[in-house]
Length: 74
Image 1 (cartoon, one colour):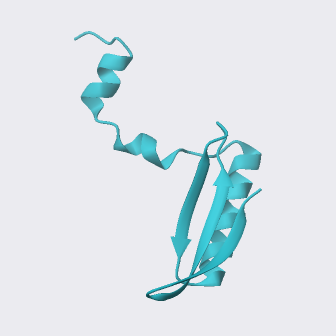
Image 2 (spheres, helix red, strand yellow; image 1 turned 60 degrees about the horizontal axis):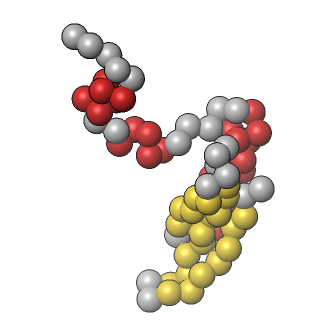
């Protein structure tokens, strides 16, 4: 279940969304407005519930690393 938490900092109040992904890892993202944070929390939770969750860090993998990991030969 995603949660929204208000934090006070140097730049004012921010809202932190915390959730666990499909692998059980803790994820968080920070927003300036409560409405944005709640919207993101609801969307993320829905994606997790329906199986449409995509790990945002997977897009950072270089193609060559992906290619080698899967043992593809040219």
